[in-house]
Length: 99
Image (cartoon, rainbow, N blue to C red; front, side):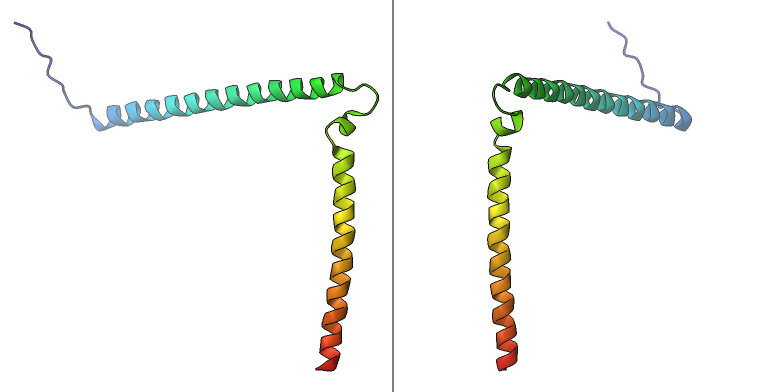
């Protein structure tokens, strides 16, 4: 025959201490994994930047990833939007004068 241990309820102080230890362990685990993920992200970011620098042959690394092309397209789009806004403002002021 095996004896079964009887489970005795914990006192409120012991229960509160047990819960606070669980909470502290949970926070420590979350912090550990956040730190692990962040450090792996930093290492990966560093490797990506290094690989971009190594690919730099005749032009800057910005040219390799298309920054100049992007900025030229962006400036062109902004100038087009500016022209359209001026047209809209002129049209709206003409409508206000006519009404």
